[in-house]
Length: 77
Image 1 (tube, rainbow, N blue to C red):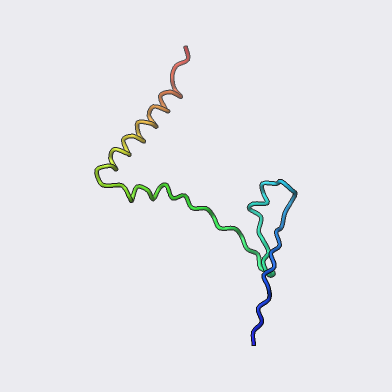
Image 2 (cartoon, helix red, strand yellow; image 1 turned 90 degrees about the horizontal axis):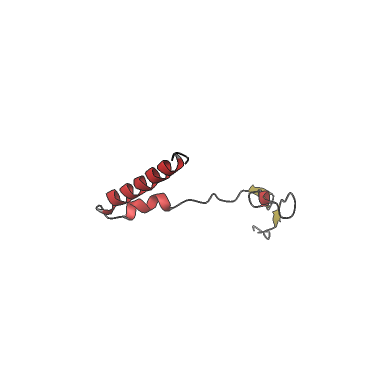
């Protein structure tokens, strides 16, 4: 008969309040477990747009980028 031991969760921390604690590996039942990477879903939003809206979005993003470039390279007065 197989026995299942209870889950023991031990967090490895460097110091209290350290940002590295969130990405530090955790030890669960003697195995090292790393947290999953977060997936950015915004690039996949273009797949849900209707066909006529895609050129409008691309034009809007291009115009925004052009305006940021022109403002950054504006001559100083």
